Length: 241
Image 1 (spheres, helix red, strand yellow):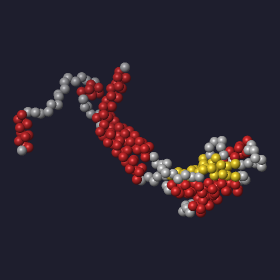
Image 2 (cartoon, rainbow, N blue to C red):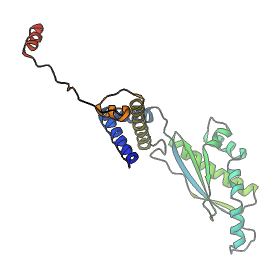
Image 3 (cartoon, rainbow, N blue to C red):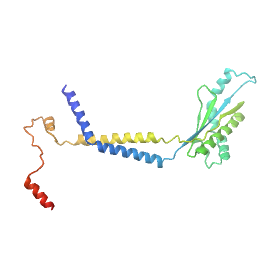
């Protein structure tokens, strides 16, 4: 019971320590949030993502009926299609078509290929600081890769289902998320510093500290009363004149 009571008293004490510094805590939290907002808005380049999708069908027979083996074969080849989309043969032609001043390695790093499970769709996403270039590159990659897949991988046909859209808002960075994370970090750090400094301070501040840490009783307490003696007050006033 004593340990539990001591813990409750300590937690209350720490709470009031933080409460006494609430203005400082609020100021630091607001400052870190504002700094994150300014950094995100002015110093981080926004990135736009544009996505196109293609439909791949690898039909092994000449009949008009699509069999289960056709679907299964197309699903198993999705990894091969991804490698083809990011191959030098495709990327070199895309660079030529769009007129990019970039290497195939740099272009490959901004291309992401997704293939939803149990489908024959491939989604080609391009991330770029220029929304127009993101759209043009995604469309060019879809077109060139569709031709190369048909030509080199014995696929009957690859159809472009959705052309890339022109992104109107950046996908990153997130201003709201960055501000929230910075505010949280600032709040935690300043609270931690205040508590650490308080716990490292071993000075006796109150009569309760004397009883708690020295285990002795306090006989009396001299109150801190402001000096309002008329004579001294008069001297202070006279000195001011």
